[in-house]
Length: 142
Image (tube, rainbow, N blue to C red; front, side, top):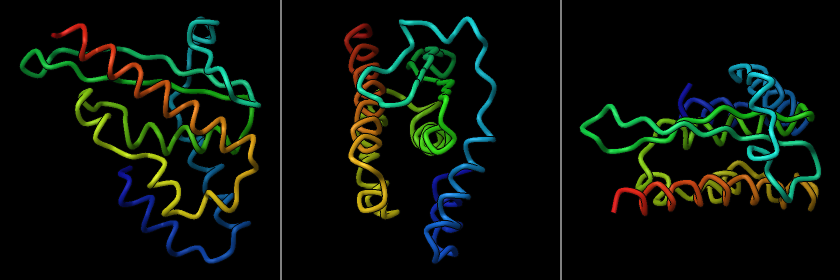
């Protein structure tokens, strides 16, 4: 699924209960994260729920790294937010990740008004974790 498909599906749903259900459904599409990846190193700090992001760096395409992610959470809605984030970021180069404003996309969907402050802080923590990974990958190639 692409971010444009998610955007189009979201636009079809007027009611926020339906939008929440859709986000939860997106979370069910996440690839399973192996239990070993539920580690302290992969845990995202700053989230009210338990959140893990596992990063793999792939250098197959002309040696330029791309970052691939698995994500998981103990909260259904957060798993859906992770699914949207991974649609935006997973498989992208560090430059693409740093050029993508995920929070603006979530604002476009209306999440700013419909997430609790704790969930919003957790979303920012997940975005910052991925952006930090991108900066590290760039520094490693310099």
